[in-house]
Image (cartoon, rainbow, N blue to C red):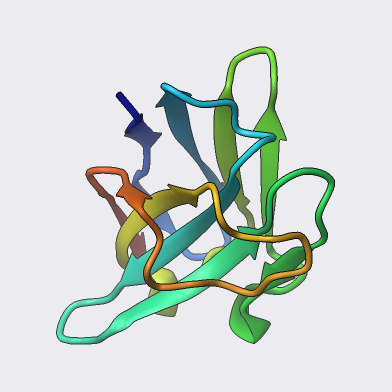
Length: 125
């Protein structure tokens, strides 16, 4: 059974950093496409950082480029989102997602098969 269990998040002041974790089970993180998405209060779901399966480039949302970094650890079978220089507009519930059909070079795909439970990130000014 595929599962994604998220941890991390919380509250931070603007300019601070947080790291989100997404522990995967039932598949290997380097064999699936993975991504991070977010939904701000009253807003739609947006792709933040995504990559296809295998050794694939990562696609970042313009507003987070240079501040957020998606990485994965094959040994821990975990995907991370390092968030630096956080801004109040980054406040949202963040979700990780995975899908075996996402090919290398893909951008964020909102119909991914598997989703984490979400974690709240609050950035105060």
